[in-house]
Image 1: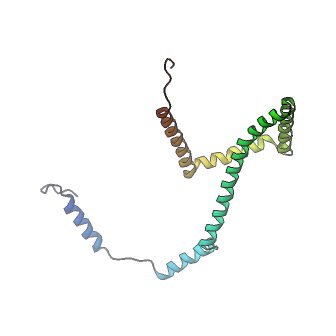
Image 2 (image 1 turned 135 degrees about the vertical axis):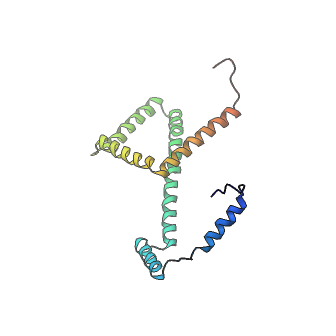
Image 3 (image 1 turned 45 degrees about the horizontal axis):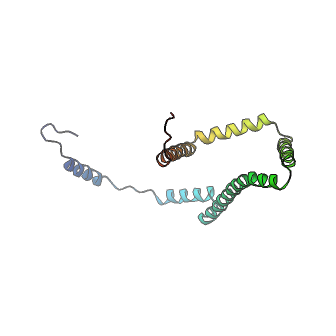
Length: 163
């Protein structure tokens, strides 16, 4: 609130606001309301906090182990193929790899409609990206990639003579 005859003073305004807030009557929820709220919370989450923590920690550990194991497997497959090409005849390795890829595709697509699977994956991805958490994760990935690119451009020497 501005007074035309007084100069602006933030400290005075802060004291006036504090006095008005302290003059308000103290209100607290009733004991019955608190009891109903706690009972509803126990019905919605019957497992205790410790059980929820260890359950989520186990699932996070399983997901992390799967991602690390998959990354290790994807990294080691080409190394194993190159090593096999040196040990065996290269044509046998290439032929076996092609047959394995065909068998993998047949195994994965048996009884599945590719378009149904892609539509479901697209719906799930769209729902995840549309959520606030998904948007923040996507923005974090873009920011991380941008910072990595900026850091690499500072660390790596520039090439001369090329645009």
